[in-house]
Image (cartoon, rainbow, N blue to C red; front, side, top):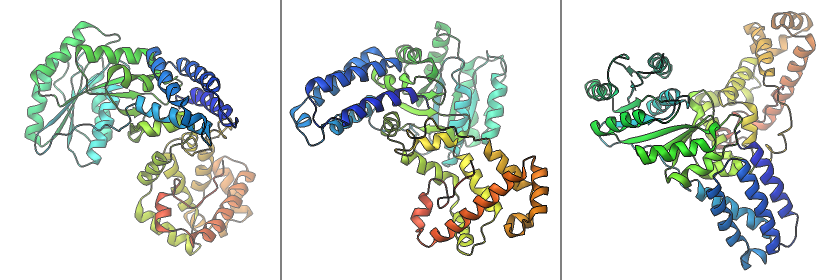
Length: 451
C-alpha cells in the first residue's frame, strides 16, 4: 500500500500521545510537528499540510480535549475527522444520465497514467451494473493504443468503436455517439490521447471534443506514483479543460501517496476511483473515510467484506455449509476457497485491512507462492482422493509429491493441516449464522491456510 511509511510514522506519533495520561498544549503542538513532517515526507502539498496542521491544532488544544478523560484518543479522532474532510468527506459517484439519454465520459490524462486500462475497467464495472458501455479509441497518436483498448475491451466483454489512426479524434468521438445510439449503448467512454507532458495541442484537442459533444463528465486519470506532479497535472487540466473528478492509479505501488491527500484540496475536484492493481476489481470506489482508516493504521473492514461478498457465491456458500456439517468437506472445496482468496487480492493487502492486525504483521514475510505449491499438490491427486482424503496412504502421498514436484513432508503437512481445519470447521458450523457466513472475509469459518 502506498501509505505504508506514513502509516508507520503516524502510528508511532499516536502511540506516544496515548501513553500520556494528561496532555499539555505543548504536547499537542510537538505531536503536530511530527505529523507535519510525516505528511511532507509523504509528498503531501505544502499548503495543504500547513492548513491541515493549523485546523487540527486549533481543535486539539481546546479545553474540552486537554481536560477530557482520554485526550490522546481525542486528538487522534480530530486528526481522522480532518483527514476525511481533506479528501472530501463523502464518496462521489460517476454521474449517469437518466432514461435513454446517452452518458458520455471523456477520460483524459498524461501518457503512462493507465488511462486506457482504466477506461476498460470502468466499462467492465458499469456493465456489471446492467449498463451497456461502448469504449471509443480516440488516441490516434500512440502506437498500438487502439489495439490495447480492443484487447482490454474484449477482456471485459465490452465493444470498442474505432476508425483507425488516420481520422480526427473529434470526428471519431462524434461518430461513436451515433454508433452508440444505433446499437443500444447507453454509455460512451472516450479514451483520448495523452502526452508525456502537458502541451497546448493536447488541451486544444480535448477542448474541441467538449465543444462538439455534450460530455457528461470529464474524468482525469493520474499516476499516484508521480506524487506532487499528479496534483500539478490535475490543477492544470482543471484550469485548461475543466474536470469533474479524478482517478488515481498505481496506488498499490512503491509511492508516498501524497496525491490522494492533496488533490481535492488543491483542485476542489473529488477522487472517484483508486487503482490498486491490474484486475477489474482492483479499480475501487474511493471512500475518504476508509482511506483515512487505512492511512492511520485502523484497517478497512468494509472494503474487506465487500471483496468477500464479490468473491463468494451465495449458493456455493450454502452448499459448502452442508458439506461442513456432514463432514464431507474435501480438497476440491479447499481449492475453491483458496481461489476465492486469490480473487480478492494479495494476502498482505487483505491482512492490512484487518484493524490491529496489519500493523502487527507488517514485518512478517508472507510467502504467497506457497499457494501455488498447495494447488500443485491438490491437482496431483485423483478426483477420488480429493473428495475423500481418507484414501491418502503413504504410497499415494509419494505419488502426489512426485507429481507436484514437492517433498513428501509438504504433502504430509498439508494433509495434517487440512484434517485439523476440517475438524475445526465442523465444530464451528453449528454456531455459524447465515449472516455471519456471508460476511466472513475469507468465505469460510476460520480455515488455517498452509502458508
